[in-house]
Length: 140
Image 1 (cartoon, rainbow, N blue to C red):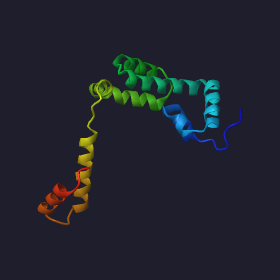
Image 2 (cartoon, rainbow, N blue to C red):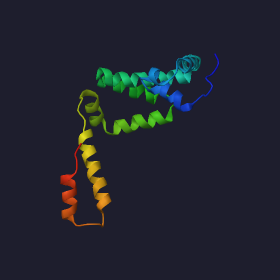
Image 3 (spheres, helix red, strand yellow):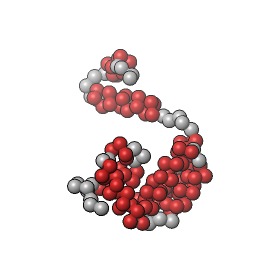
Image 4 (cartoon, one colour):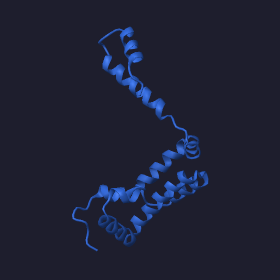
């Protein structure tokens, strides 16, 4: 099979890690990457690990997460091994993220917004003006 005109590592990463790769890549690219994956055991292993990680959150299975960590630790992918080690460092938070649909995205967004306002106002005005700018600014 002929490679696409422009072979891209970025597109290969999209194919291996993004569940919506069919919307992001052309059929020719998908066919070529599938052939490449099937002929290369390393890419097949990355594909399997990526899909297994996605299934953890789809099925909300903590057991599958622990199995995935074991699979990663037995692999030769240094970056994934480090990633899995970091996840194990905060195991309770990771398990909560798997099981629950809740997150603190809105809170983090508000904190980020406040920090940006503070950074803009630093050294320019009093606390009263900063307070007015925060209170009167849009929250959405």
